Image (cartoon, rainbow, N blue to C red; front, side):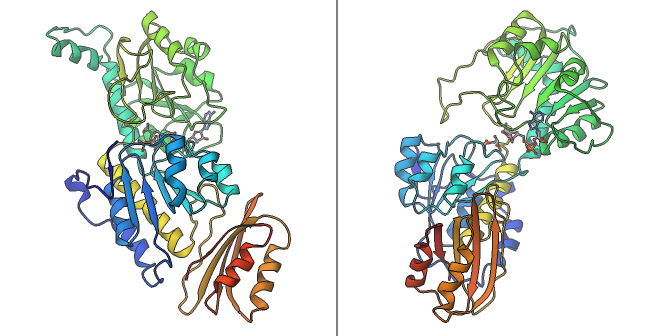
Length: 436
Ligand SMILES: NC(=O)c1ccc[n+]([C@@H]2O[C@H](COP(=O)([O-])OP(=O)(O)OC[C@H]3O[C@@H](n4cnc5c(N)ncnc54)[C@H](O)[C@@H]3O)[C@@H](O)[C@H]2O)c1
Ligand SMILES: O=C(O)[C@H](O)COP(=O)(O)O
């Protein structure tokens, strides 16, 4: 395993300018006193250097690993970590979270958060952050490229040339203009792709489980089946969920037009790859482009296997939909900024499993945070602790979910360890932290 403290990564010219988004956000935190204790950050899966630099600028101690870790490895490593940053591979399970008594937050440096047990994190008082659309454009562009490549059998003829075979032919090769792209899941990526596809002269139809605004001239369909039976290209942009598990299997592939193409850059659980391989080998489908797999290697190297290997006109990529310098830089900035804000100010804005709260900094205030089980009377008990110590509350904001309450309190006196202990010992308290 390649590891080290803040080991430098290769940087392209597009990433050398200072991150503007982060600058603006972090400037607002400059007046806040630094954290009372050293902050340890563990970053896995080669999180981009922009994130590393932002943490280091705050004086946080960063350890960056190139790969993901197994559950056992992570359980060991996370024990004394305050912030953990992952991408799509690392599974942050309930067991891992229960072993992370110092953990303040999890940062998913990607879109998907299905790799984290969000419910367990919430119940343990740990907010989880992601980057909801920084790699959207990268995925949409990849799909457009693949639609063209599949229509022209580009990978097969290119492979032929590399191997010394000249395979000039127009048979089965088409323009994409006038063809129908069927998008399953019309969220950030699906809708962005819709715009790009129409600009290439494609007709767009789509299916989503919620009502969404059809962009341009795209047409919503009433069912998955309607998209499958009418599209020349079917592309999947749904999240991993129990509803999307194996949503495309033998039955669904049979509904697709003969000679149609299937693309999946969402999650590997969505398509039954053996059924897809059968359809490609039988000639029912004319090609496929697959970026995600039910089981993906935890690090780069050899040994990857899928039933799609050597299927005709089949593009296989190693989960690189969001892997561009632009996307990774933006993700690094966005997620690191959210995590720094959480550490310094308690802000949970954009957390995916937590009440979203933010309280502006006011000089001469002292801030304490408390996460508790959402039961009646907690606020009364906490305020009683302050009142009995002649401490005046200057600002107090509470947000709740069904299970937890998150409280940010600003008071007029520096909070002592004794007061912190009194709050932390309340039965419903999950996590209590003095910020400044
Ligand atoms: N290959 C990559 O590198 C890569 C990069 C980014 C995202 N992704 C994956 O792509 C997924 C989609 O990303 P996004 O940003 O567009 O997410 P999003 O949340 O913006 O959109 C997902 C859409 O799917 C819809 N949906 C959910 N279940 C559905 C179902 N059963 N049938 C039809 N529609 C359904 C939702 O209503 C939503 O509109 C992510 O969850 C992630 O797993 C992969
Ligand atoms: O969820 C995502 O954003 C994508 O799957 C990309 O994940 P990655 O950062 O692990 O490439």
